[in-house]
Every structure is written in structure tokens, then in C-alpha cells.
Length: 464
Ligand code: ADP
Ligand code: MG
Image (cartoon, rainbow, N blue to C red):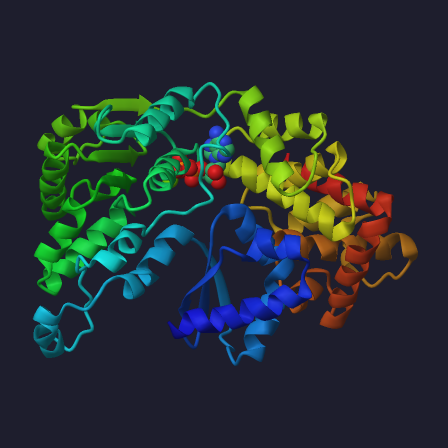
């Protein structure tokens, strides 16, 4: 709780020092996950945001944390799902302390809260986990997801009557969560008092364990068995966990018998989850199983265009195609690449054109983890056609100074080395030289096309 307040304060200050677009793109869905004397762990939604925070905003974050009396020397950025995070916070204001069990709570010295079906708070309580940003309207349909989309729409229109359960499976980042959340949101839109529960199986497991520990199993069971639509995301996480699978089995039966809708997602089909209990596997086979695939190029382009539009930008078709061709893993990464491009351009006042996209993506995509400082210095020297030893030696001629400065800049941008370390790598004693060099090249690369293309070219070679 305190952590949350602290992080809100930090974000409040950061919001004042970056543009609105950047704030929303890079900071909005972050959270403070952990804080102690040695380490601050900041939760971020994806790898692109992680990279961006590490590279561009780390100093700002450190300074702002300091202003708020956080002086832990290490900052880590960890990928986490903001949904899961929110859910752990939410129940406190939607679940009522049960008077019947308050004595017990006191004894266990714990402020356990129990779901108590109260007319006024119930529909709110059941809303937990849904995020309104996921709708059918902003989901682009194409090969790979059209079947899943059609099934989800049918279910949203008449939950519990068709395709029950619906089992959606496919790799990460291809829109499973988006679709099943859209079902929940649509059901609620049509019928605001419907009891829609969205939960990840990890969260289900956690709540189950807590319920056992605090002897609230019946409340737990009642809560889930009282749903009209139960959406369980990423079911693979309860595989192998016997007790919770059993609980889920009973929940499943109760809901199914009452013709309540069940929607399940997973990263693979039931038959490929080895530790999934047989009886659950057979239950899942009762309804409809749909495989979701990464959409084809055309669909990926359409997704990009729509996402760019929500940022108020009409993306040129060559840029769209470039991104959609080069980021083939999944939609989440595609979206991340787009956000990165847009933020990069906004920061520098550039048009998001093909050149920027390719230099940005070329560097981010194929980045192996094992580039060494030496390789960077060597590559840079070779690019400027000067001897590597000279860049590391005492000479101060202009044709040596620039390559040296670029090498320093690259050590910072690519390896995030500290300034003293950068200075040492290039044979300097004073780390302020490194600071000045990095700043100088950073500034120059904004308006000097030669420097910019030098950097791009060196990177391309490094990561080729
Ligand atoms: P999964 O649950 O399969 O890992 P998500 O549903 O979280 O994937 O999707 C990742 C991101 O990609 C989300 O931001 C989602 O909105 C977006 N996305 C995926 N597919 C589409 C699509 N067809 N149209 C629009 N956005 C999509
Ligand atoms: Mg998901």
C-alpha cells in the first residue's frame, strides 16, 4: 500500500517532466513491486518498455526516487502483468469483512476479507479483473484469429448457450487475453448486473491457497460458483497443482450444470499440458477448442494502423509494412515496437519514417546479449578507419577524438556501462570526459545526420 502511494508520487513528478505521450507510453502501466535498502524493483508491462526505461529514463527515475527518499543503489525492471497487480489490490474495497468470522480473523491476527454476497456491492465485486480497454471494436480480425473472434462474439451475445466451455489456446501475445476480456466487457455492457469474473489461473491459485490458510474455503467456492461468466486466463499455471485443480473441477461442474459460461485460455491445447488432470482435460473437451495463431501480414498491418491512430498518428504504409514484416513473433511485440518508434520520434521531433524505423528496430531486434566493450570499440574504430589503439591512447587529434567519443556513447547506450567504467575502457582516468562525450554525441546525433548514420551503421555491424 505504502509502496503504491510512493510510486504514485514518483509518477506524479515524472509526469511533469516528460511529454504526455511519453508518460502514457512508458510509465502508465508501471508499478513498484519491491523496495528495500538495496534494491528497487519496478514492474513494467513488456520488454520494449523495460529497454526504454533502462536506457532513456533510468536517470530520471533514480533522481525522482531520491527526491522521495529512496536511495537503494540498484534498480531492476521486471516484466509483470499490470492486471494481476491490480487485482491483488482491488478486493479490499469490494469484499466485505464477514461479521460471522471476524472473531476468527482477530485470532489469526489477520485482516482477512471475505466475499460476502451483498446486493449493493456484488456486481462491483464480480467486475474484478476486467479492463475496459479490451473490446471487440478495437480487435482486428484476420487469419489466425477470426474463428476465435467469431466464437467469442457468439458467446458474448448469449453466454452459456453455445460453446461451453470455450477453450482458446495459442502462443503469447497473440490476443487471447484481449478477446476473452472483450467477452466479459460486452456481457457487462449488455447486462450490467451480470456476474462476470476474469481471473488468471495464478491468481485463482493464490486466492485458493489464501482461502485454505484462513479457512475461508466455502466463501471462495461460493464466490466462483456464483459467477454467470467465469473467465480463467492462462490455465496452464494450475497444471500440476492437485488441490487447486480439484477445486476448479468442482467449480467447473457447478457452473456448467447451471449453464453458466466458462472461458479458458492457455498457451497450449489441453492434450499438451502433461500435468493437467485427466478429468479436467475431458471437461475442457466438452465445448469448443480454438487455436489462435499470429495473424498474417495484412492483418498485422491493419493492427498497426489502428494502434497508431489511437495515438493520433497516420502511419505511412511503408513503415507499417516494415514493422509488420520484421516483428513476426506476436502482436504484443509488434505493438511494443510501434510504441517505441512513436516515442522515439516524439522525443526527437522526427516523422516516423522508414529510416528511423529500420535503425531503431534493426538495433533492438537482433540484439544478442554478449557484445563486449572491446567489440564496440573495435567496430567504432574500424568504421572511422582509425587504429583501435589510438582511440584508447593519449592522442587528441580530431580524427581520433570523434571516434573515441562515439565509442563512449555506444558503451553507454549499448552496454549501459557506468561513466567511470567507460572512461577506463578507453584508457581515460577522468570519468567526466566520458560524461561529456556521451552527452555531446547524444546531442549531435539529434541534428547531425552523419553521426546518426555512423551510429546506425556501427550497430548494424555489431549485431549482424
Ligand atoms: P495473449 O493473451 O495471447 O498473450 P494479449 O491479448 O495480451 O495476448 O495481446 C497482446 C497485445 O496485442 C494486447 O495489447 C492486445 O490488445 C494486442 N492485440 C492482439 N491481437 C490483436 C488484434 N487482433 N487486434 C488488436 N490488438 C491486438
Ligand atoms: Mg494473456
